[in-house]
Image 1 (cartoon, rainbow, N blue to C red):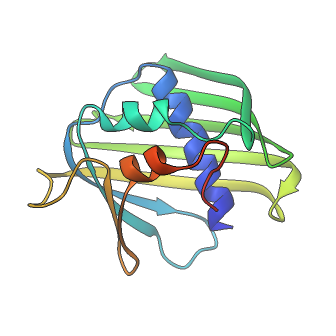
Image 2 (cartoon, rainbow, N blue to C red; image 1 turned 60 degrees about the horizontal axis):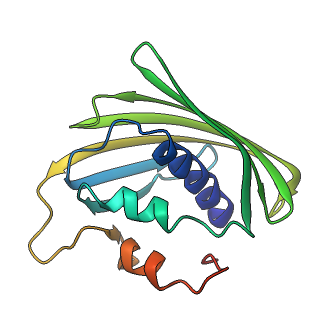
Length: 170
């Protein structure tokens, strides 16, 4: 289930990058993702700079595993709405996300998706994302470093750069 949720998040993230939306303030961000039915939120900390999201977008998910025929972003008042229809591992994922916040100190997102046929046994998913800027990245951290409590850290820039063509981590 975490893999499928990760793909939904990636689909929304890459749609977001395509749209030229507000950039997050460089530094260390804490992201808390809450999924109904899970006893506790998934937490991560990400060190970013101006180029991090651009690199992740340019190295984006493998198009043989995820192909989007619709990626849209629009502003409605102080909200950013991202919608996509993507094929992921043979399933059509229809995703809608609404983001709000100032993106320099915090933002919030509500993400929902449906899968037809079900993806990894999942017909639909809902997630709430709360992100807050913590300050400068920690000494020794590089842009792209992601810390997953209890799981260690990884560098998304290096991971995306080193993926063999035509693959996406599972």
